[in-house]
Image (tube, rainbow, N blue to C red; front, side):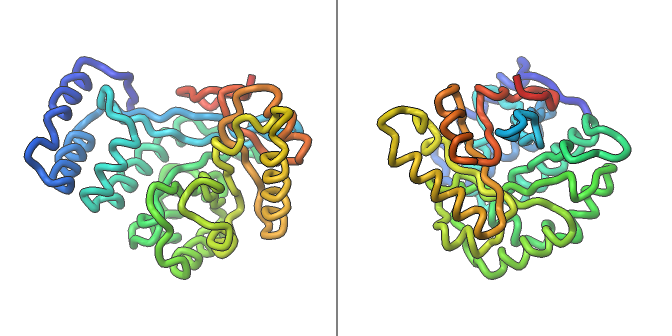
Amino acid sequence: MRFFRTSHRAAAQTSEGDLIGQGETPEEAGSDLLSLFFASHEHHVEFQPIVDLKTMSAQWWECLFRPGMGSQTITDVVEAALAAKREVDLDMFAVAVTLARIAEVAPRGDPGPASRYSINVLPASLLAPQFEAGALAERVRGVGLSPGQIVIECTEQQAFNDVPRLKKQVRALRQLGFGFAVDNVGAGYASLSVVAALEPSIIKIDREIVSGVGNKDAEAQKTLFEAFVSFSRRIGAQTVARGIENRKDQLALQDREVDFGQGFLLGRPSTMPLQPR
């Protein structure tokens, strides 16, 4: 599979996309934007390191799907899919492209502990038959990867509905070797009681809580991180602080024994999985 950067073709798609929504319902406008999305051949995947804050080495990479549609971002596409009630179609497409790209860059043979990749999926998709744990494991093996190399990262652009079914799916995924992360904890839809019920292996703390934690007057934030770390350990999960952009925040997080960090200070998204700076 080939991956491209934005081109004149994508710019043309954007011009057409700017007309979407005029005189249409949100569902119709969403379907029209998705049609452009699925027709594009300009998509690519970038990798951002998730860094062990003790060793300062990358332990895995978040896979960031970049739609080749000019000014349209993945957030725009997700919102269109939600409006059109086609989030499963979107996630199936994005996961297929992402797995193919991971297979191109992942080391062959024994992958070792630092060859994991997280893939973003909406909660509703995880409840769809297409994402049944065994079927997803077969899809992963079909491109030459193992479930142990993949972390399913549940994004919070919609609420966690039907938590009992989602919990059952998470358990099935983890039994097959997948990691499971809940993103944006502290600022998204999921309460800590819901997070605990899902039994994730990883909790990703929202960047809004991370930003400024190293400041002298940020005692409340520091206390909050101590609570997150304690909570995570009680439920058997590891913590990731998102959006680390300066050294003061990094040191404050290390002092509070946060497990991993992610952010521009440690490494920007790249077309290849690179170690942190």
